[in-house]
Image 1 (cartoon, one colour):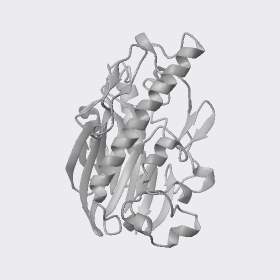
Image 2: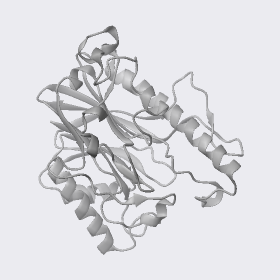
Image 3: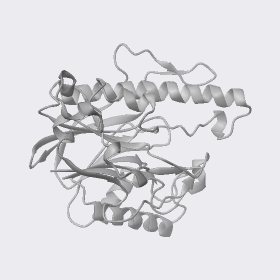
Image 4: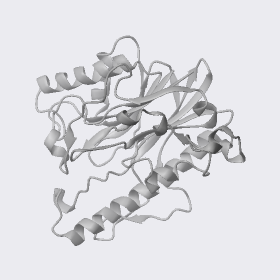
Length: 316
């Protein structure tokens, strides 16, 4: 089976301030997205930046065969949310944005506003597969692309840039902690026997502190001597499949000309040792061809396809 994640980049119907300006641009975007999904043919695909439920249904209607859909009801201020699309039927287990009980609210702006939940909900599902139940959660953590008061994407000065960079990091850290709490629920201390996957746009790279929070107990990373040696941490640990992606393809977005892997697939012990292949883009094609994005997300309004590449793993 193939499990993956993909940020669809502003999936809205025409007319929305963040969506395509006309029907032709919308249909071009849908066709580009549908072609990729049909070729991936995922058992389960986590989605980000779904702006309207109707738009996802439009996309599903262009795909070959029958598909199953689920969307979080917890959208951000732009209306974007996470969801799942898959060939296999699945049941929603959780749709939450809450921080863990002992985690205090974090500062979000210069006015001292604090937030006590993630900006976008985390959606968890369970799918029936030939290897048994697969539990998966999808997330979209706080972006590194900073925004400032009154809709600005450029700071007034470097002090403001630094402060808002800190606020974004506070939020992404808290959201990663909340996502790890959800992973703990899905693993239930039994990762050696449970198939669990955490999918999503984590908005930071493999070695970032926020991404590392999700792994759980240290040790046994892919490529280290401890990987093949069982230990007590295996029951609650998650493995990022990034080291299994060929080095030249290890990116899912291009930011100001720089390739970065900010979309991730993390899996439990029972899954990681059945991985046969991992990648970005499409399995049978070359390196992902992606546009370079800047600091203003409005620049790509209505662009075809997505500015992210899918990240996926194939499991026996």
